Structures are given as structure tokens and as C-alpha cells.
Image: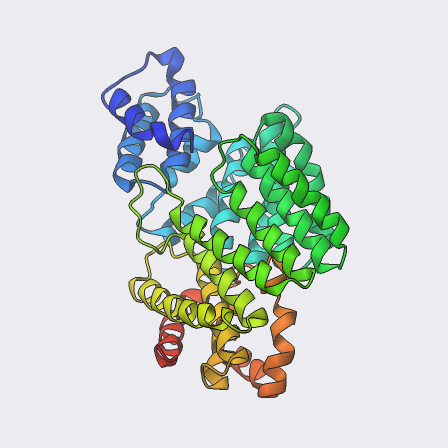
Length: 404
């Protein structure tokens, strides 16, 4: 967030600057850092910075390679993620260790975003194996944190806890509060999934102490989600759902500098999906009306998202919306069972984020099997040989059939 707020000013300041040769390497590295942090913002600014980086690359001595991050940013193509992915795969085999390391980190992020968590884990592990003693703390902790999220994503809680505990001390020393909050959220979710509610509460209490007085982008949202999940786990369903609705409202209000709000931001969809899924499992009385209204809103969001389907569509977040719709549709009879189960299976194929207990796959499958035995297996077989990007049309048709 701090760097994103400066990106436009930096682009204006250096747009026509030619650093002296002795500053070329450090200037290239600094520009690459700004580009990394501008990916979520204006593609125009990203392109301006990339043009400056290309000029520095041409001016560099042939025996002075660019820093690894700069090489990756030169290969970036925000308009064509597939082309960027192919370039990253080549850079991941580069003889320069620093370039290969950064390329693997980016590959891991991109594979996760496109619904390939196992590929993402392999690349993050490959990045970790390339880290050298002189690379500094962040480059060691970042792949560890990514591996914590990814292994949690595929249900390997033991590995997730191991990676999170390895990354946490570094994040604390660096003052990376958002990262610390997310890692503690993961530890709390693991504890809740295993029934260790006292351990989960201790982590949530730590998060609340860490967040007091801090300026945090997303950390407070994770803190609120964990508190909502813990409230549900203790049997206070109305209280937990109310906390979830508060979290959803806060996440909808979150903004990045220079990024226009559309209502389809990943963090907004993340909050709405978890809130709808929680209502599907626990709503009673007046909370059913909240769930019904949220089902309609999520259906509309899903149609907009799948119809527009940008090149950089976040498949795990899109899968969360599909999962929430399928769960509500199945548990509340709001959709034909086949359509609800198709939505769930498509969510699974999109590698939806299942990091909190409410979103766990094993919580909904007994209901699906009880309603329509064998349909999960049948739909999985139907979609098995197609990539998530090839299933957008199928997902759109399923959502269109859901009642508005």
C-alpha cells in the first residue's frame, strides 16, 4: 500500500530520466520494485515504468545483468497472462540464480491465480530451494508464507502450520503487519478445523493486540473473519453471522489508491462468499432473509464476473463465489440439486480458497451425496480434462439457471 501510493509520482519523476551508468543497476532494481507494487493498479503506469526499464536495459553494459526482479518485470505482459507465464517458465530455468528465484515466486503466484495450486506449490518450493544466505530475510520468508497459504489451500494443515511458523518471526522483525496477521489467521483456522478452540482464540487475541493502532490494509479483515468463525464454532450462530456481515461490509469498503471500485474486487468477493456460505450452514429465523438477499447479490456478482472474465481473472476467488452459491442453493433448496452440485464442483475445479473452516470441502460433500449420490463424481469426470479457463462458459450457464 505504501509503495502503491507513490507509483504515479515515481513514474512522473523518472519518465525521461537517464541515470548515470554507475546507478543503472540500482535504478533498474528500484523501478522493478515499483512495478511489482503497481500490478494491481493502473496498467498505464505499469507500462510507463516498463518503458523506462527497457531504456535502462538497452543502456546497460552487456556484462552487467539486470537484477532478477527487473528481468521478470521486463517479461511481464498484463494484457496476455499466458504469454507472461511462458516467459516466466523460461526465466525460471535461467542460469542466473536471482532471476530464476524471482521467476519461480511469480510463477507460483500466477499458477495459484489460474487455479493450479499443486503447480503453485512446486514453484514456491523451487524458489525456496534457490534462496541463498546473502539474499536477506524477506526473500526467505516470502516463499515460506506462500507455501503456508498454498498447503492450507489443499488441506495439508500440518505443512501449513510448519511454513507459517517459519515465516512469522521474520515478518514480525520486518514490521510486515499484514503478513503477520494473515499468517496468524491461518494458524487460527487450522486450530479451529482441528477443534482446538482455545489455541484459535489465543491467536485471534494476538491479532487484535497487533492490529490496535496499526494502519493495515487487509489484516483487520482476517482478524474479523477469525473472530466470526470462532463465534460460530462456540455455538453462537446469530452472533457469528452478525460478525461475518460486519466483516463483509468492511471488506467492500477497502480501496487501493488509484483503483476504481467496481464491487468485483477480490477482497469484496472473498468477504461476500464466506458470509453467504456461513449463512447457508447456520442461518435461522431473521438471518435467513440476510442469506436470501446475499444469495441474489452474489449471483449477480458471479454473472458480471464471468461475463466480463478479464484476462487476469482470479479463479480461486471466483470459485469461492460459485461455492457459496452452490452451498446456499443445496442447503436451502434455492436451486435444483444438480445445478447446486455443478456449482460446487466448478468451484473445486477453480481451486476455490478453502482456508477457513466454513469453506472446507468436506463440510458440504455429505449434503451433496445425501441429496444426489454420485453426482459429484459424475461432474468431476465431465470437467476433468479441461482447464479452469475453459470452464467459464459452463460456470456462466450454471449461474444463469439459478433463481434470481
